[in-house]
Structures are given as C-alpha cells and as structure tokens.
Image (cartoon, rainbow, N blue to C red; front, top):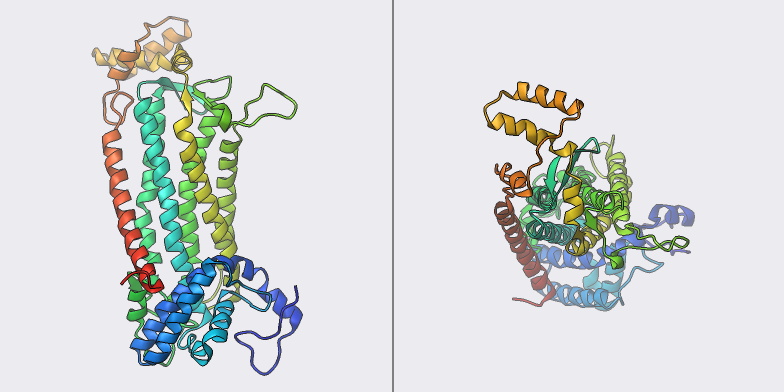
Length: 458
C-alpha cells in the first residue's frame, strides 16, 4: 500500500517512500487497538498542559470536546488509521486538527511519541490485566466448584507418569486452583509497575517546559509516576516481558490442567468424561471423540513462551534511551495477552462440564497404588518406617496380597491439611474472594477515571 510522504516528524525533505514503508511496517495494524487509548491519553495530557499554563482555557475546551468526539468516532469505527498515517498518534492528531483547527496542533505540546505510546500501552495493559485476571479467577472458581462436587471421587496420583498413591478428582482441581490463585495474587505486584504515568518523560529526557506531570497522572487514574524521566524508555521491554512472564505462569497452569484432561479422559484411563459437544470428530474414524480444545490450550501456552522469548530477545543488549526496536514489542505483547485470555475463558467454560467416572477411578487404585498405604498402616501401629518399608517391599515382590482399605479408610487416613480427606476449599475460596475484591477495586478506579475523561461522569 502506497503511503503519503508527510509524517509527524517530517521536516523539509520528504522521506524515501520505500524506507518509510519499511520503518512503518505493520505498526498501523497493531496500533489499531491503541487508538482508543491514544485519545484517552491525550485527554489526560491536555489537563496537565492546562494546569502547567501551557494551554489556554479556550484551547483546552476545544481540545477536550474534540477528543471526546474522537473517542466516539473510534468506538463507531469512523476514526481509523488510514494509508496516510504512520500510527495511532498521527491518525488522532490528523482527525483532531482537521476538525478544530489550530488548537489541534497544540495537543503534542510537551510530548513525544515515545512517552505517548508508553502511556497508550499502559492504559491498554491495565484493562487487559483486569480482563485476563478476571478470566483466571473464573477458571479458579470453576476448579474449586469441581473440587467440591467431586471431593470424594478417588483415582490414582502419578509420579513419573506411573501410578503412585491415591489422589482424587477434588485434590486434582484444588491444586490447580491454588496454582492459579498464586499467579492471580501476583497481579498486584505487576499492576504497581503498570499503574505509573510516563507522560512528561517525552523522548526519554524530559522537556524544558514547566510540566505538572502529576495532574496528567491523576486525570488518567494512574497511581504514580515514572519518577526519573529516563525510566520510561528503560522500562520498554522490561514491562512487556514482566506481563508476558505473568501470562506464561497463568497459561502453564491451564496447560497442565488441559494435559491431565486429555490423559484422564482417554479410553485407557477413563477417570474423566469429555462431553460430546466439547469434543471433535474424525473425518475417517466415526468412533473418535477428540479433545482438541485442550490440545490447543496446551499448544497456545507453548506459543506464549515464544512471545515472551521474542520480547526478551528484542530488549536484550540495548543501551539506554529509545530505540526503534521497541516498535516490534507490540506484536508479541498483544498476541500473548490475547492467547492467555482466550485460553482461560475456554477452560473456565469447559471445566464445569467435565464428568468423572468414579468406578473407573476407584478400580485403578487396586494393587500398586495402595502398597504405600500398607506401609503407613504398619507405621501407625508402631513399626519403624524403614523396617515397615523394607518388609512391605519384600512381601510385594513375593506376591503377597495386602488388605485393601475402603474408600472411607483411604480418605480418613489422609486428614492432614491439604490431603484428599481434608481439602482446603474454604481457605482457597477466601483467597479467591480477596483477590476478586482487589481486582474489583482496581477496575472501579480505572473505569471511573476513563468515564470522567470521556465526559460520562463528574
């Protein structure tokens, strides 16, 4: 697609058309999701300019009204990045200036595209973290409900992919829920890094203007500032990597759950039952019921590792300050967040519909999986562990049949906190509630700031 030569940074010499196309690349495609945040970031920025005495009340009112109209145009998809635009910033500024005239040319005062895009991305990340965290909490909640419903359904636990000791459907789900809650609990630390305004750092070294950075910060609902103006560019790649590392942590928990479902619902195991409408068929084998959604969850988690790796490689070995390399951080960041959100939403949809086969699970415990129970039975009667272990091992090799405990006995012998006879569901639900309350508080703060800027709230 041919692009016009004019750019936000054009001076007297028109840039080479091929060079311009190469350097712009596919930025307009990825920037499309930043358009809304660019307008909102500009609404906060002009409040800072007015407070700094750099924008008259008249121009501030013109810009505010123009930007609010631009926000509606973005939502209506009538303000888009065209062939004549490099990015979201040029599209918004062009749209604004054509409608309000000279006042529109003041919107970039005290700002560089470097702190502008950093602001856009952080606003985008705040919304995305809340959405992904919500999906993760939904999945953790679904797992806790599954654990409560099937807490006494026994099946083998595995080590080295071999039957080891008794476990349960409840313990399986509770453990996965706790791992997810660990990751969700880490959202607050990540949030503290994202919830900082970069505006006023410009190209990385500030500007010789009396900017009141705190005013723009408060208008945009940020909790703090990047204090040193050099921090904003130094954090490029760092912040994206931190977000994707968090996504990978969450995704790996979902991936392990998916892998277990694939295994346990296979005919050879049969502990879990995959509903027909959550399975796909074969084009040649009419009997097949394939767990494609779980396989693709596992695959998306693997690809997310690639997104993180791309960011780590892009940021590596760069000196301080801005580098155009940063432009290519958007693709893996946006793609990784999308993948994480879709994985969690799909798993949260699927888990409540999974069935269990209690008979198959209990039958699979017979024999090897209960040998350790015999050791512990003797220990409970006073025999030294090492002596009991050796005696049972010798008897097992000779084919001795040990008395098989009942389901009730298996559960009763595991009454320690977190065992299959004493699942910590109450405690995990309390953690779930605490994290949910934190997320709700941050969502309300964020939404209130966005509504005020858009003119929907006083």
